[in-house]
Image (cartoon, rainbow, N blue to C red; front, side, top):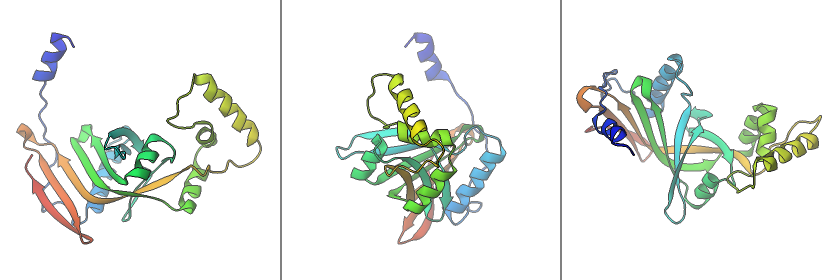
Length: 217
């Protein structure tokens, strides 16, 4: 790393103003609060407001993180879809603890979510898969996600194979592909404020009741 870049990292400062977030304005239920912020992110025309970092930990305690799209939200939790045989799927089969992070920089906001994950019903996975573009459906069959391949030609040949296999018929959902629902136990809302004195409101689920607390920035 050059000295100029290092100086930039050490000296860059951006103040935060944002809308205040306090114990009075925050919703009693964190899912309702998330919906308020998510709608503001969507209405603000942010790029991919449904993109979230998903952190998992395998049986050896090694963490991994990647960006995944949220595809559903209700009182049961946050839903995303993936290949169950992927690295994230293997991690979650060994350890169902999970952490999510939404970062909406333009709004100076982030939401951190901790909880446990479970597979959605086969009916829910079938319904979502049926709505995907056909190219994405074929891709789910063609890609053995997270496995090593020699070059891109391997993937392209598998795509052609499954295009021919399912020519003229609906593409069925692979058994190894489906959804997860994240059941939150802790949700923190972070709002940027001036002088790094940010607002942090956390909800903790205790005996199916949400308790709200403020954290020091």
